[in-house]
Length: 250
Image (cartoon, rainbow, N blue to C red; front, side, top):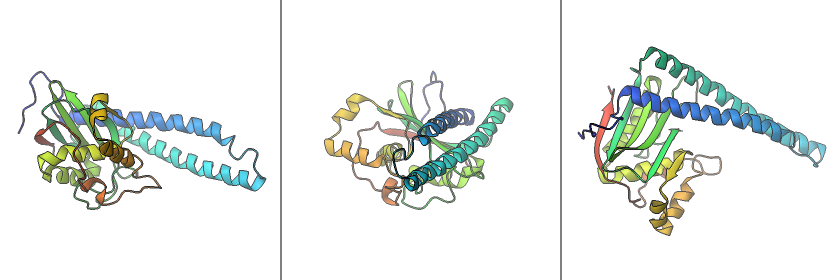
């Protein structure tokens, strides 16, 4: 087991995992609330200049999309209330996670909720990963911690089955392949990431193209498949994994 640097503020406690996921939920909620406002403006322009039937169809499609977004907002608000309560009580006992330590800060960082359909072994994840009222969210953070780096998968008790299944298959990978698997998850499952320009530009063109092709994965045009996270196609020049900790596991 790798011991993080003593001066590093992040050591992988349940409270820290909870606060990181809390941040991702607040960001997602803020973004969706802004989307609803913008969609309302666009709805007024839907189908303008078209025949009446085409206008009604365009407005109907926007209304359905707005309704779905509003449902997502209400779901996120309910999750935020649960985190508000945990924060006020100082009780993070229902947080779980996996902390992957890198030998140096990663050139790719992110902070986001994730909802993959398959784990790193290509198996369907049990249940959902947070987008229903009976579930909680799974989050992914890649960060620099002093001279080291860290990747954190976190989930709350109600998401124990999918969150733990995803983390276990990550932990079962050879360490030389685990960092590449996390890169695939970042590009396929998050929209809040930053890549160091010098890292990105030095990747082979074919590798950059392959990562870009992963971005729309999970959408209506390119749904998730068992090979999404499991299929190792190339390496991404990430720092070596030097340790993996499990937080509050059964």
